[in-house]
Image (tube, rainbow, N blue to C red):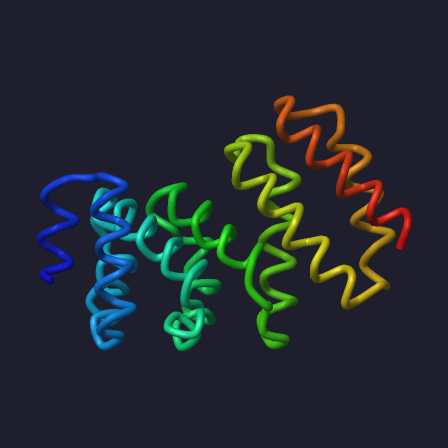
Length: 171
């Protein structure tokens, strides 16, 4: 499969899943996908991030060598899709200990900034909760900020924020 040409040709869920499936069958292809993910082309990195997300959810071990670089890349992401799909992966996988601090900082920033899309802020809530559960000293600060953020955002964000806050208060 020619990953770059597939991504350049069109943007579809079917193609994103086909790329993920091809990489699961031939993990050596992940390098081609990640080259597109880190591309300076907004369109290419946006499209690649969808396949990366599907891959991360189904076969996170294939992405493990790239996780640190993906987190490092968040502040300079070319497109919101990169942020959304990357944070979505960390919502589901076990977060490597050496990435927890940096990821907590970035996700906390997304939570605080209402300019980010609801999905980014919502996925960030889950990542923040996961990290805070491993590091209880972070829970108080996170609970306080979630309480402040309950007045902002969409209905979907507020719903997730309330549920996250409830779980944090119980633990």
